[in-house]
Image 1 (cartoon, rainbow, N blue to C red):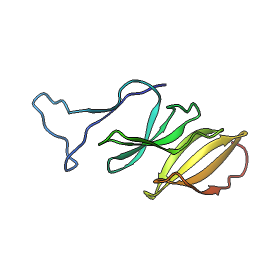
Image 2 (cartoon, rainbow, N blue to C red):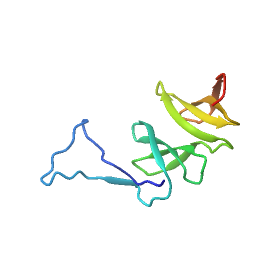
Image 3 (cartoon, rainbow, N blue to C red):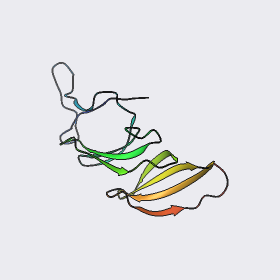
Length: 123
């Protein structure tokens, strides 16, 4: 499944009032090249789980001011099932590895793995 991404940059956290009721949408991704699932943002840096050049998913950061993209957590040989931001600094990433669920914690800014959380049992 592919998706487009548009955002509206709010000032003072309020929706602007317009005559026609339309907001000024800024395209971030507008070519249906991959799936993009929003995870979190830190100011203009938005983090996504995506299939862009990664059929098993990876995590990227897009700066919405400059549209610069950076891979944060690259594609693994295992499927990345979900990613959950933790305490504004880390990302908990769940992989399916050999019919087992594996949880790893990464630094959000650098993508460096900092720990693995043991999970007992299958999937």
